[in-house]
Amino acid sequence: MGLLKLALCVLFLFWLVACGGGQKSVDIVLKLNTSIAPYYTKVSIRVSGEEFEPIVQTKEGIFYPGDKVSFSVSVPEGSERLIESAIYDPEGNPVYYANKTVDLQKDTTLIMDMKPSQQSVSSYEVFADKWKPAKDVDFYLLSEDLYSLNANFSTSQSESAYMVGSYVAYYDGKGWRLRYLQEPSNTELLIYRKYNLPFSLPEGISSMEVYGSYEGVLSAKDTFLSVSSEKMLSDGTLIFTGYADGLFYSVAKNSVNFQRACQEEGECKVLDVHFTGEKPDAYRLFGEYAGIRFPVSYRELFVYKPYLTYYLQVLGTVKEPCVMRYSTFIKLQNFTGSALLEMKLKSINFEGLSPSAKLRIYSTDGNFTMEGSCESSARGVIQIPYEGELYVEAGYPNGKRIGVRLAPGDNKVSFPQANLEVSKYELTDKYILLKFKKDSDLLWCSLNLSQEGTELTVDRIPPWRSYIKLIRMFDKLPNYTLRCYSKDGTYYVEVSSQKVLY
Image: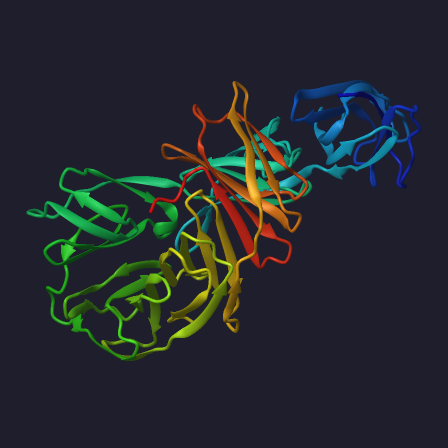
């Protein structure tokens, strides 16, 4: 592996300039379109690569626009080198920042378009009905390869920050979130917090299946309930329904107080639903308020509230050519108890399915899911009771998934033979290294890491990256799920360390 001498020039000019170097040098020009300060006190450069620790050099002094600042840095020759640069004002603030990922070769000139780094940062806690300002959020700026911690700030200290990195990272009730920044820009941080509430079941009830602000089975031994902010209202109101020896519900602020439904006159009505066309296996009525959805029916009765939006969950089965079970939510307009619904089936032709695939069809609005196994069918026709936009996903035992977008007017799905694979995944004392190979038609990717209830999500990995070198944030090697999207957005490919069980 050869070494290159990296020569850096800083010319504070309004125009693109060249910086001369030797025959075996790489020249870097830091380009400023405007000058914030009358002079600057420090210039720094960092060069990173997969197989070596970051190389950092700084020069301090008094630098005026037009001055030349040169560095001589020995850098391993190779591909996917991350170059970062920063310029500091007299108070020591990194007021300009730029980064670029390149393949370093001899006699190369790089233009670093320095951008003002100070940008506004707003943080909001996400509730079901609205966002509320959150003023005490700590966040961090990481390099594009996720290895270097460049800066850290808190929204409790200032409404702006020096965005000297490619990712802003912060922790909330769902785990670590890493959001990609193409360049320094104004940023909104969306926070999902967890709230622990005292809880007890009604007297005489040993267990209850609960929906709404929390979903799961609770027992009489449970004393606290953990609720995420997006499942509650901004004033602290929580909405629950539950099934035990009947239907229960609770609507209260910052507390849970279950009471049996249909005890007062006029509180419940008779549910009278009929179907034409395809007959479903079963159905259940749901109510929705501020985006929180919960079942409201029990046997022939349902809880009626005029401010609720009602949905009927319809469950059914398709047996050919694959055994598929579906769940679809149908919105009921102005519902007061009676409905006559026609179950229309849409034909979807599919081809290119490999043997032993698990097929999943789901809508982008969350109102339709359909799953089943296709042990030998590479092509066929599936009947589905849904007309909106869909994704048709094929999952395989090795953890690979291919999802194809199906527009409302389309009725044919062809699964591409797309390649995505993780070639190296290891944990060291300092970082997690994940290397991957993908087809040229796949561009932006996303990544999820999970371990024992802790999650880390990288919302976007730029197309030119083939590895990340995440600063160590886990005790053990976590499970990964890497998803990459095609250029035209019509399909995605996903690989995971968690295999599909049949």
